[in-house]
Length: 290
Image (cartoon, rainbow, N blue to C red; front, side, top):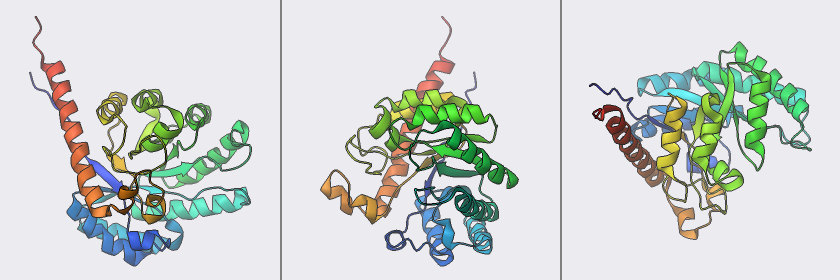
């Protein structure tokens, strides 16, 4: 009996420490970083900090990705915080979508509005529906990220109420473990077909450490099994971080861990977990009928 199993594909957001700490992600920074991420073994990337990029910059970055055999999988858009008008926010989101379109990205990740009260359902539905109208113009899928306690169930309700096939969820495993439940795999199963992309990162349940998968308390074998069960066919996207977040990590020694080591070790670990779950599935599928 033949058992065809999809090859593991680990992706990551681009982190350049010297740019990350001062929020200076420019065209030149990305053009220099992309070949480095190719050498780390990544074939899918996420781009953040888009406000310093123009659509023309996006085209140049897209070309560098093409030269390096890399696909721009997703972008992370800006947040709506207190004091920012909704129309101003949507104008910023349109800029992010224009850059994403130039990059030829498939997914735009967003957070819930950072407004009080946080769980105003009708307000959130209205804002995200208007945002989905923008991303839809550019043939982008919109993935709403779980962040704080209570977000996950609220986002599931929102996505279902919006009822569009191009609106789904980005699962941030570190946020889920810290703020929602230690059963991250169970939450992923709840997301189910709504899962559009991931931010895979780890912690010890005390701070949002943004550590490499495997360097924390999350059960990654259970997480990968759950992701596979949803039918998700995209890359396993990680979300690493620069010095500003690292400085708050629970374990002081991990605050100085260099990004090169984190990226290489994290990709190797996720590939190991993936292969182990493949062996389990293959044995299950190919087991002889007694």
